[in-house]
Image (cartoon, rainbow, N blue to C red; front, side):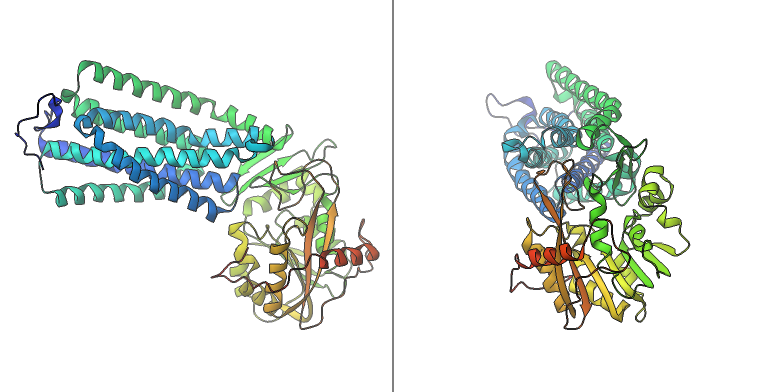
Length: 544
């Protein structure tokens, strides 16, 4: 460690050694540096969480995206720390430059990711991976800049008052970790619900550049030359101007990007706290399209085929009491209520916002036939797994699992052996369970993993698939926007407790498009894709 008054080598800058010339007492200066550490740490963690959240929403598979962001960012932080060694002789100026850069990059990252996703995702070729490449680039850039902060802040705090390295590191990292805690809590509980991802990231960038510039230009201004002070001040003002302009235009930008993703007929776009719900069309004779977290849940010319194929084979038998897990849009309930003899339908969905729209929105309520206002329908807003755990004894003739695709990380627990064990407990002896298990043609391994999991839970299964023919959006709850518009299918598994697979048949209340012969052929087509020997998926070892 260099002593405070050690002579500087020839040609060394004046800030290389000696105590900082502060406008306040050393104790106050040290406190202000630690406050800046706190703020920078909070902002840095918000940038990380914002990248993870946006990537999970835009690209899918939250575990993979979180792993990519965090691993790349931690690696880059190490490289940034090494690179900062060259800046520590000009620690004040270097820290000011780093804070301006990280505020600009981190603050604009969400908007840039959304722009690339909205306007290039359907281009194909190399552009199809544009969001992923940009995600890695932002993770790398933000990690490099965060990594450069700590060595420079260590140099600044030591220049105020020299102390042993261990004590300085302890103070610095204490402030850093507390700031990370505050940033980690502020993101889901304040920034995301009240400001949204775009404005929240921009505001974080503004706080970041103000804190960094205030520390350097206020506390360490005497260590800077006139040109350095004006350069840092101008850079900070430019960054603030860019972030402020972006925040002012965020609403228009989001609407334009949403039109690029969902088309120009968007009527409703809300984030419910569980997911983003977008409704396009559905009034004045226009077809309704319902998107949940960017995936088309229902719409197009053949959207009703999914709900018919999900519900009707399962109701070819006793069906007085029906449980729908998911289905907060009311579309599956509409199909159930078409069958005579239904006395009670329980719908369990996690999202009260979606249920509210299904009841009140004129387009969605018309599409579901006002099913959720029927006196036979009872809706609970709860987690399906937790709700099933509270069911005592066989209570239902039919259980319909109208849930997101098993390939979505948040849904894997709803396709686990434990989940199906609880569903079996809720069924009567002659009851039936039907599961939407994702596309058969494009993802046969996931489809047959669901089948293996059902067998392990004590069910016998009959697979079937139904092709969709809509030439517009790639319809179905498991296809992201921008995906190929080639012919697609929906895969289903009809299951019954025991060893005998339930027959694929239709009840007396015939659906509009399905036929018995077509259903048998669909079952044979699904069986031809079978992959044997797959292990079951469990809560602690998901296989999708």
